[in-house]
Length: 362
Ligand code: ADP
Image (cartoon, rainbow, N blue to C red; front, side, top):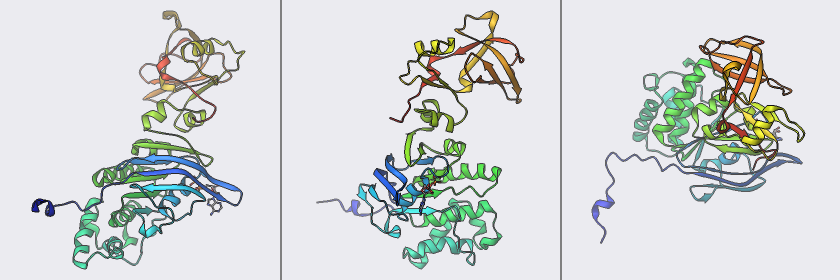
């Protein structure tokens, strides 16, 4: 006999559904002969913040639209919480979407916009007020509940849109460049807030952006897309420090990319070949992963000459000629910057911080 206690729910039960993971298998979208998304395989873990990152036109919004049910896939499967949702209408999926345009109701108040999300779900009138209050507290808009949308700042409108989307208790929240209309400072602040909201609600977030800094600072998982395909997916640390391809290395910040033909015996290329073997003869080195030392005090395998030194206060950026077509870019802390243009320097390279690149993603 089962215990009657089991049938009782705790009074303070959090009624939010469990967050759910998202699995894409062979997901494809074509428009006539044009391939918008060319067969994407991806696993996003439940309760994580995933950012889909890539240049304009690479297929980010199309992937998001297919997960939300606004774009019909040409092929492939989308599984949320173990169930395929292909063919299920958007309002019956365990997802909600925050659009770039926000699409708020201008004639309703802040509370009215959020309550709308609850009413469409058929939540009882008495409960709507209470849940609206909770959602507005979550996005820190409690005191502005009775304001009209037109009386809010851009960042506040953004928070209303997020509260309204969360009102339907989605297992997965989809966000399509929601901060792109905000100025740089407000954007930074909203990035932190969004991250905090995601952690408080433990909802799976999938966030589309073309801004690498935004993706790096918010996400647990970064999915780098290019030409309708996933080029690499991993933690911010992984994709930054272990990029698989030149595209990923360059898209996520500054990178020195050294490409060597088989007949190239420049000292730095010799060193790279022996210390970090690369099948494709291509390596990436972050500017902050290179050290410079006085030529006189070193037996560094690579010698160079400073072509240019630019002081930025916190850092100094050097361009160092090492016999390649392009100078090696080196960034060091501002207080360790005794070299001027023309100085002979030893170039320190740590093999653990050099990455062998591949021509194509694995
Ligand atoms: P992103 O979000 O990365 O900027 P999109 O997913 O919007 O890229 O678009 C990917 C590609 O698909 C682009 O080349 C775009 O022009 C094309 N595309 C998107 N929607 C349509 C459509 N409705 N009809 C035809 N082509 C489209």
